[in-house]
Length: 222
Length: 222
DNA sequence: ACACTGATTTAGTGTATCCTAAATAAGGTT
DNA sequence: AACCTTATTTAGGATACACTAAATCAGTGT
Image (cartoon, rainbow over all chains, first blue to last red; front, side, top):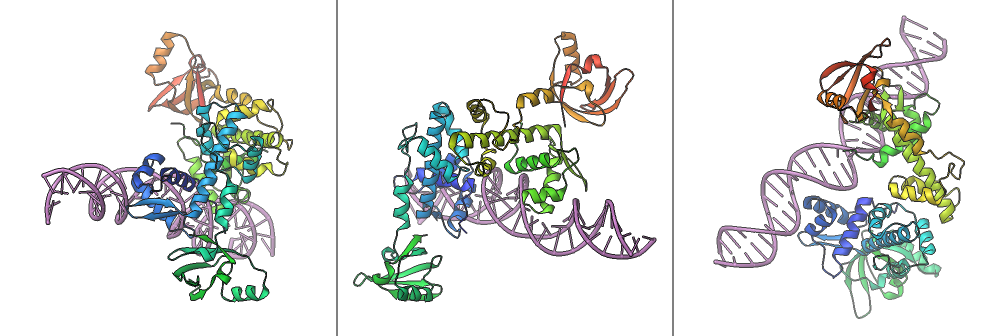
C-alpha cells in the first residue's frame, strides 16, 4: 500500500522543506526557480501532491506550500540520504567537495535503507556533511512522528490510524467493532477541554470518545 | 545532443542483450516476461526505440529485436555498471550475494562515469562480478566500435560520420566540400567488390568513392 | 476606489510508458 | 486447404510530469 514517492516528488519535497524552514510556506515561484521548472508546472504538481491519498504537502491557492507531517518525514529522509551520500562520496570515494552534489542528487532517490545504514555506519554515524550541513537523524524524527496519539488530535485535523496499543481484549473488540483499526481514516469534529472528549467521524459514523480510549490509538496526521 | 537513454530504455537494452546472446533476436514475449511488462507495451517501446534519431534496436515486425551497434554499446555500459556495482556492494559495503542485484538494478541507471571509474579502480579493475559473470571492459569495446571505417560499410547500412582521420589539407578540403564531416548521416547504395568503390548518399548528394578516401572516414553505424 | 505589476492559476498540449481488449499473423494440424 | 493456437500488433486509454499562453488575483501606489 505504502507507495514510494517518485523521484520528482522527492525533489519537490526537498525544495519545499528547504524553502520553508523559517516557518512560512514556499511560494510557487521560488519552487519553480529552485527546481528549474515552469511555475505553472509547479502549481500542477503541488495540487497533485496535496490531493493524494496520503497528502505530503499542504497547499493553499496563491499561498504556497508547506509539508504535512508525512511530507516532512519523507523530505528529511531524502535530505539525510543526500548528505550521507555526499559525505560518503567525499570520504570514501575521493570525490571533490564540488563534485558530490550532483551525484548525490541522483543517487538519493534510489538507494535502499540497507545502503543508507551501511554508509552511515562506515562513516561513524556523522552529524554533519562535508558542507557543514546537519544530517538529520531519523531516530529523532520517526518516534516523534509515529507516536502521535489520537487523544492529541484537534479539530479540524484529519488522520489515519496507524496502530492500536492495547492489550485489554474487551477494548480491542470494542475498537474493532467501531472500525477504529489501523488504516481507518478519521476527521475530527470537536474537542471538549473539560473532559478531553473528542468528537470525530470514522467510516461514516460520528463518535465521541474520552482519552481513556483515544490515548491507545496512534495516528498519522494528514 | 547525445541524449542519455532513460532508465526504461536501459532496461530494455539489457534485456534484449541478454536474450539475444546466441545470435537470434529477442522475442516480444520473452522481453515482456523478463521485464514484467505486457507484451503489447513491449511492442510499442521497441517501435519507439527502433525509430529514434539514433536507433538503439533493430526491430522487425513479428521477428523480435536485436541491438544496433549503438544499442549494444549502451547495453554493455549498463551491464558493466551493474556488475561493477554488485561487486562493489558486496566487497565494500558488505552486502550478501543475493542482496546486491536489486540495489545494482536501481543504481546502474544513475551513477556517473566518475563513480564507475572510482569503484572500478578501488576494486582493482575486476574482470568478474561476485556471481562469476564477466564485467565487460569498455576499453575493449569502444575502440572497436568507434573505429569502424566507412570503407567497411556495406549496403544497405546507414551510418553517421564520427571523425575524419586525415592530415592532407587537400583531402580535408575536399571532404568538407562534400559534407563528409563528423555528424553527417549517410546511406549506402552500392558497393563494388572490384575496386572497393562505395556508392552512398550524403546530404542529398550521391557519390562514389574509393577506399583511398573512405578509409579515412570513421563512422558509427545506425 | 482604480489601474498597474508581478505572482499564480487555468486551459490546452505533448511525451514517455504502461495497460487492456480486440484484431491479425504464423505455424502446425487434421 | 480450412482450422486452431499462440505470438504479436493495433486501438484506445490512463497516468505522471513538463510546457506555453492566456486568465486572474494581490498588493501598491495614486
